[in-house]
Length: 255
Image 1: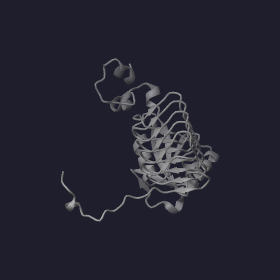
Image 2 (image 1 turned 120 degrees about the vertical axis):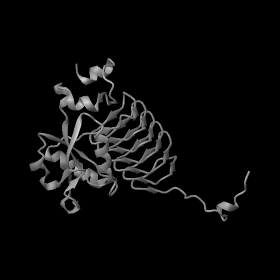
Image 3 (image 1 turned 90 degrees about the vertical axis):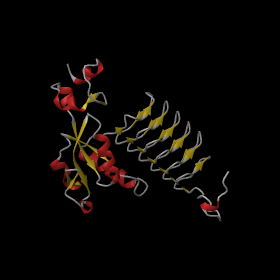
Image 4 (image 1 turned 45 degrees about the vertical axis):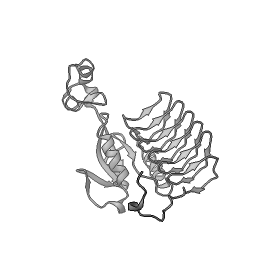
């Protein structure tokens, strides 16, 4: 009996992780469980570190190395794994035996991530998406490759998410919304139903986009913004900051 069957039938008391327990993941002789696809992560900054942490909890994958542009290599290893130049990665970790995840943020309005995405595909790598097991995603949702979806996201029915899209933890996306390629949606964003977000957009922390609005290509929506109408290409929106009152906290009235 493999460990997934054992857990389902109550014969395994170990803590389950995505349907498998960590003990049986290493011990079980079932080939389907022992086989873990080998992943190379592009990046060595915060996004790559977050992707590494997330993939550690996915029994389908095993991160074996990091790769980054040679001039950005500051250490030879990260989390005990080798960091190799992107120009050399094919010869060391060939795409016939490895898959890749481009784990880069929104540098140059997502252009850097897009460039490395296309380069990795030209090298022959299949790009994986990592989707948190704590995200709530309707079964009708379509998700492209090299996407990251964080914990506690809520993605409603008939949403389409393109390729190379990052959706940070706690965000909500309403029904029939389309998020096109190479976008970055920050933490706790609320996107209404029927919204279209064109490629290369950045949506900042705690932003809200009303139903049936179109966010044009390469827009930047700053943290806390509320968007109620369609935008134009490359527009930048900034929410009004909080007002500073002419009073100190110890002078506030007590009620």
